[in-house]
Image (cartoon, rainbow, N blue to C red):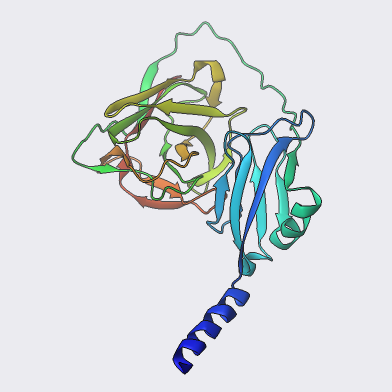
Length: 273
């Protein structure tokens, strides 16, 4: 009996010390008041994060041990919301659990037109293997996998993204496609001006997306990734993997740290330069 009481007390004490609370909210545009879908929410470098759903709703569990860490809410085209976790917890009731993001005004870069005929190339890991496969490390929202693409010349114009799907057990799966510049060999800042959302029901084959309308131009090596943005359970999605080429770089969830995890995943981009 004493052992049972002791165990219960330990559980209670543990819950108090490492108390975990669930925070639910909605993210909206500060001006239009429209809900913002697929916004990244997470503790910087903490691998604790999520992504808002199609109606801007989110849910995140925050243990008290993270109270002095920093939470960031970010979306392409909007200013980042950054708070100490303890302040975020206090602010949620005052805001009726609604977080408003302010649009960020960005200047359009000048596009220089030339009569020079451009060369077309496919860069990245061209594997289409069915025997070597891999995918997202977890089904946590915001889990992201990708590779570094080495450019040949600058400027380089990105026309298409391709992913070699070895196996897909979902009826339909939705991703966010991201492009980042690099710092010390790892993804740094997203270079896109708007979200690129891809969806597919392909069971086996190549997911290919025309990117010409996004006017993506790079001057140096860059990182391309797919991000998990909808909770579909654990049915399974696998990409082709190759022994050679750029290794996989991934992060567990929104705002987490990036890590190199192994051999190359079958992602390529069609470019001109």
